[in-house]
Length: 137
Image (cartoon, rainbow, N blue to C red; front, side, top):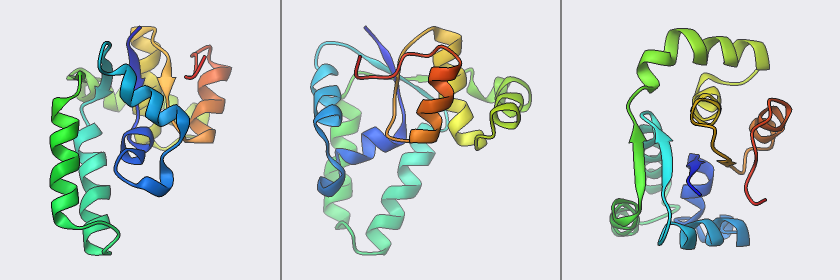
């Protein structure tokens, strides 16, 4: 079954100290299934990668290798995100006390009726409260 993938899970595939069984299982799941991400996802992931290279957490070559991995995965960018930004996402962020970034992932999961994969505990708590299934099941 497809799922919504947030940056925290995807980045754990790059940063070994953040890898968990859940994140490894989700990476493996993308061999046969696919994930949806909001349109901001490449910028969210990219910003953290650039920062990690600048802080020497990873090397530039490791960032390039990770981007090749990401590009090889069954990830679909949802292009309706921007149209939802000043209404659904903003209201969700306000009403649930989330950042607009986190609300973007949650709005996508709600709209598509998909489970959410995230390491962000606050986001997961709100998602559960709103009836969104959290991976793993």
